[in-house]
Length: 365
Image 1 (cartoon, rainbow, N blue to C red):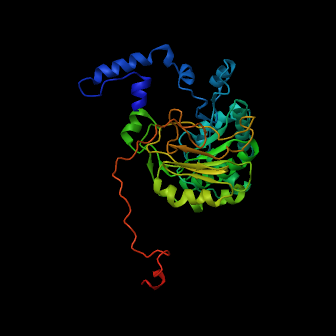
Image 2: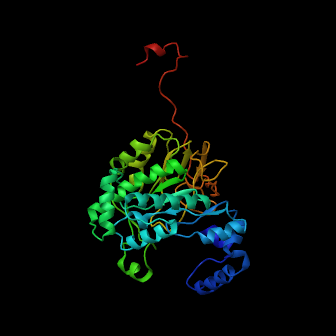
Image 3: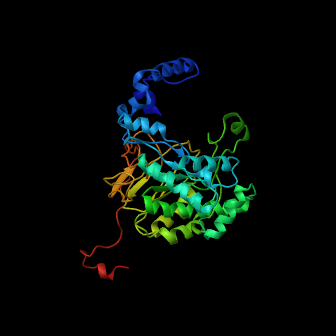
């Protein structure tokens, strides 16, 4: 924030109650300049790539216009299917119908439902997408048989769904999304265990997903085990796990990432990254709506799940910062170097143990 205020927005005076209105007006005037338009900031802030978060039924018309203007490789979509996989959402049926219309598929059963999702994922890949994004409350990934999944979906299409069935179906769809990522190369990003829209007044005034994300206790290790047992060894999958709870990271996600072949953990505060298929990252809470992209080094974006070479970076605890690094963007951080310690140094006390050079050292106690 200090860098943004001083070097980007030109605020040089110390903030106070006396100059708050004046500072606000100065910032508003600066943001109205042509150089602060979104596309202009891509160049002035050296932003290599920017990913939006888009619903499964999004027409991606804005991305088509950006691609026509030469920004197709710098502004990319991210597939966010939450609205069509959580059966108990109030807007689920409308979202599924809209997705089917966009995909040109009449969704009447589980088979056509999967067909529509795969069609939309293909459209996102064609538009330059690198990743999917999944914000589930729980992390269960137990797969269902096609018959079981079809029965639950048919009930939901008929308006008959309960919370338990919706939770089971959502977990099954996470495993299905992992299968699809193995096939189309999209990085799979998952951030479970967050109770969203916690403040009822803010939700009523401003709508969903504007903050107040509170972590809840869930068992990540057992919940993710079915998915990782099925696809955790598949070199085509890149799975990035986010959490807003540092205790969860240290207790579950870091060991989980370390126990999966070719995985790396991303601890709070920074570390090193190895070629990976599953990564764990800590994201500060509350989490603002932000989109990320894939950590690939492929020459064909969105087509391969190969990961970056060994790198060390500071500041990896933030998901999206100015020129920051995240497991799914892969940009180097521009964090200021740490100040040298001002603590006094203390010389070690002289040893009282006898030296081997002393002829009597063997007889010493």
